Amino acid sequence: DPQKARSSAGVNQHSFSDFESYCPPLGLETLKITDFQLHASTAKRYGLGAHRGRLNIQAGVNENDFYDGAWCAGRNDPYQWIEVDARRLTKFTGVITQGRNSLWSSNWVTSYRVLVSNDSHAWTAVRNESGDVIFEGNSEKEIPVLNMLPVPLVARYIRINPRSWFEEGSICMRLEILGCPLPDPNNYYHRRNEMTTTDNLDFKHHNYKEMRQLMKTVNKMCPNITRIYNIGKSNQGLKLYAVEISDNPGEHEVGEPEFRYIAGAHGNEVLGRELILLLMQFMCQEYLAGNPRIVHLIEDTRIHLLPSVNPDGYDKAYKAGSELGGWSLGRWTQDGIDINNNFPDLNSLLWESEDQKKSKRKVPNHHIPIPDWYLSENATVSKARERGTQRQGHAERVSFTFLKKLVTCG
Image (cartoon, rainbow, N blue to C red; front, side, top):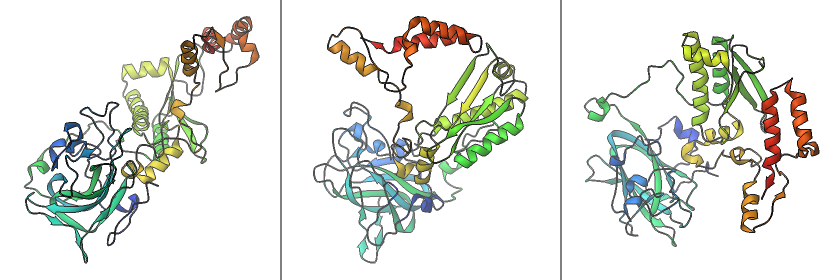
């Protein structure tokens, strides 16, 4: 379980929720810490340099390129290190480590020391009453392991010194540092202006309760063009809320194009969820401001926005935090379904048929049973025409005919 952070003697064990309010990640994972702030004793090659030692970084398909999945030392000995320059005095409180992301090799650090410095020359190791603390590292390459320092230490630089590693591998690691930057008015980097948005939008990550509240706020701001509804419940009983944006919300207008935007199929991938929430805020505000482009969209189309298809997965990943959750926690639904890929697998049948030079044949759709009357072309077309007066005749006919052709592979 990624949430089970381990620690060695003298180091307290904590969950993500404990340290989140204490000191946050410095930003190796998010790239807030730049490549120029990362240094190492040696590197096996450029693609395994210190700049690749970021928590949750992924290797490319070709692992021998410039984009490999960890920092790997050039030698396997206890004198190797990777170092972070915080560029200002920082209260360091913890370290999170992973092994190397790789399909072909197994490399991780099983124990390490932590050292701090103010000038990158004189280093002080983290100690307890027994001497230098040896922190327990990883036992495999993907699950993040959190170690909290016995007491917070204030310094500018922090260095990780691997002491042991997987015996069939080599020294490779990805990491994140937990720390609170301290006020320093004389620091150049502290004085630099940070870019901020001028848009009146809610730029933050929203948990389920906050997401629902934001949707209600948008509906309250624009009651004449929005409607909140749900399409059912998740495995854990969370409603799948959607917002409709239209000049006549709740009404299907014949001939008016309808568009559906969904996000969060992988619960731990939050960018789409937040973009959908920003989109509904933006459209509401711009409609009220009279933006002609937005007014045209709302009056001539019907838009459905569903920000979280997999709220159970999001909730699981949110509680662990990205640092400890890894790439897989919350990706699937509660019953193990990958919503993003849960479509009929007709490609394999087609490729197999081509490889074996088989003649055309009809195959069953394993995803949704096809009614027998769909397989009759006349019945399909007539049924489409019959329903066309109620829905969108031509589009209905196209979709039914396409479905029939879709399941004929050769």
